[in-house]
Image (cartoon, rainbow, N blue to C red; front, side):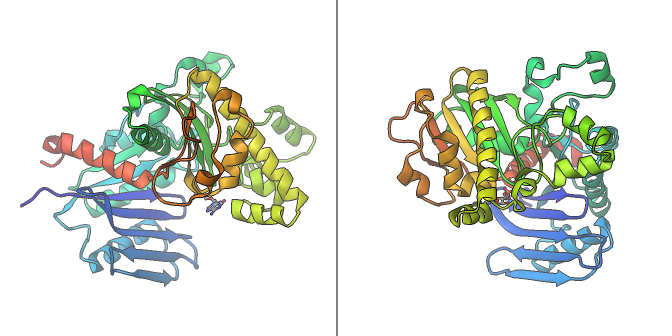
Length: 408
Ligand code: AMP
C-alpha cells in the first residue's frame, strides 16, 4: 500500500466546525465545508466536494459537535473520501491558545489535552471549543494521529521586551498574563511566502505582515522569526478590527464600570463584539464601508480613517522594531481585496521607502504579487493567506517525522 497522503484540517469554534480535506501531494482540496449554529434549531451545513462533487447544503438542527462531525464524516464518505479511508494520514486541529508551553505543532495525546485544558483561563472562548472538536475526532478515529497546530506558536519567539506588559511580573506570572499573539499560522505562512516571492530564504528578510480580516493583526518578522505582534493576552489588542476595538486606554474599562455602571460581561461584549468598524459605523464589512464612503457617508469615512490611522501607527512601530524592512505584506479578506486600504495605509511614506503603484495595486488575483513600484527600496506585496494549507503542511510534516511512534 502507498503511504497515506491526505490530511483533514478541523477548525472547531464554539458553535461551528470548518473543515478541509487536502491531498498533500499537491495541496489540492478534496473537500471543504462548514457547519454553523451548532446547538440551535437553525443549524446549517454546507459541504463542497472535489471537482464535480458540487455543493450540498442541509438546514436543520445539529445538536452538538459530535453530531456535526458525524455529519461531516458522512458527507466525506459520500464523496468516497471518508474518515476510514486508508489514505487519511492525520487530522490537524487548529488550536487558538498554546500559551508558552506549545511552541510547535504537537501530536495530541492525553497529556497534550490536559495542557490545552489548563490554558482555558487565558482562552475561555476558544480552547474549550477546540478541545471538543479534538475529543470528538479522536472518538471517531482513535487510531489516527491527530495534531494540534497553535495560533500562538509562531509568536513564542518574541523577546521578553515585546511579550511582557509593564506590570508587576509576579502578578503577571501568577495569572500567565503576557502578550501571546494570534493568527500565527497565517503570519508564518505569509512571511515565508513573501520571502519566496522575493526569491529569498526567510532567514534573509525582514517582513511586516498585515493580516487584515474580520480579526486583524500585524507582526514584525525578523529573518523568519516573529519579534513582535499586535494582539496580546487575547485577540482584543492592537489594530481596529471588524467588531473589536483593538488598543485603548485600559482606564476606559474602569470608567465604563464605575461611571457607566456596565458589568464586566457587558464591557467584554462591547469591546469584542460591538466595537471596531462595526461599533464606529454599524458595518464591519469593508466593501460596505467603501460603498458608503463613495456615497458621501461621513460616519463610514471616519470609521475608515480611524482604521487606517491605527494601521499606519503599527507599520511605523514595526519599522522601528525591525530597523530594516525588506517587505510589507498584506493578507486576509481586507488585505487581499481592499486596494483602497493598502493605498491609504502606505500613502506619504516614501521617506521610509514605502510606496504603492496604483496600477499594480488595482490588479486582482489569487497569486502572491508585488504592488510596489519597480525598484522600490521596500517591496510591498499582496500575499493570500492559506491557514488550512499551513495547518495541513505542519501536520503532515510532523506525522511523517513521528509516524514510527504514533502509528504503531
Ligand atoms: P477574513 O476574516 O479574512 O475572512 O476577512 C473578512 C473580511 O474581508 C470581510 O469582513 C470584509 O470586510 C473583507 N473583504 C472581503 N472581500 C472584500 C473586498 N472585495 N473588498 C473589501 N473587503 C473585503
